[in-house]
Length: 460
Ligand code: F0G
Image (tube, rainbow, N blue to C red; front, side):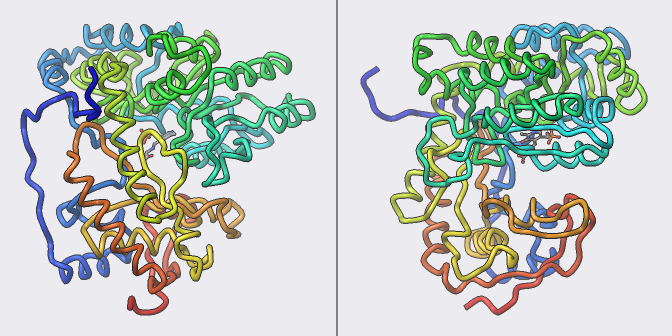
């Protein structure tokens, strides 16, 4: 107590080598990847901030739990440990394991979605939107206006716009099979949702008889922000805040690759018996038997242990502070970033940093390519490449053009992050010379994963 430095609350137990590359190697890798960072082999990436999903370091106790994994097809003890750990935080009667978050989404929307249905969310993540749309339903985003303003310092920029939700439900409640709230709001900058807002959503859902589900990927980070920022929550334990969030919902989808602190896994959970029965039928068809659902027993064990570790205050304090450390340094260097700094990532505002590149020339793509070129950092465009293509084939600018520097959990040290800061400052100093891009090849949906690009003018 009394010291200012917030340290990594762990020491390193096994290490992975990293490989430095030359600028010429990186340029060649970019060209053969069609300037799409998803197509790069990870061995040419020095610091991989593409995603915080499944890329974190597991703890000693998680590796030990893996040894305990029991691979019984049905009713494995590992399944019961997993179920207990999930229900300790999210006391839903039905827990349905899946191999990752989008499998839970696909199962749920294949049961609840369909043509004519509309599903509101604060902001759908890309796979969530794609799974809603694949069912024939429409996905609508109702985040509060502050959530779309990168400079707004609102403490809960992930909140749902209650007026817009109520307006939709008042006219079309029969067409809304479920209302979703994503905690934290990944696509909107990793911003949290308050308990007060969740209560407001609940009240509207009750008024119109719509179930409320959480996309709970980063529930622990959301609970930490509630503890820090929401009046009256400061003295409360994180697991209690998580249980409050769960109590306001009828179910959840989850990717254990985020706040499960695991490398793979997810689940779908709910109160409704009939809905659970229908989801389990789909599960058996495509994922597996209901006590393993696409996961090995050892994966279930790693998640069960991860759920105990992720609600630790030492961990969460370090986690959120270390992300903020990166964001604050970039801000101090004059780089526009989404504020307040989110939990799992820092989002650079590429549209503001590259005003000479119009949204349909993909400023986020340009900035993320430049970060790799300059320093071997892999980031992720979250903007018009990811969200600009619509199911009817038309294209329009996304609300924001961001570049996400996602921080894998417990993986990089402060000096790695200091290096990232240096590279970002270097690229920002040359921002006005970065080119726009055009897409030369792309699939019909989720194009950001496989599209190929061409720079429109040579990098100066
Ligand atoms: N919901 C949110 C809010 C997410 O961020 C993700 C994944 C998913 C659902 C799907 O989970 O990957 O296990 O199938 N987000 C990752 C990311 C991929 O990079 O933000 P999944």
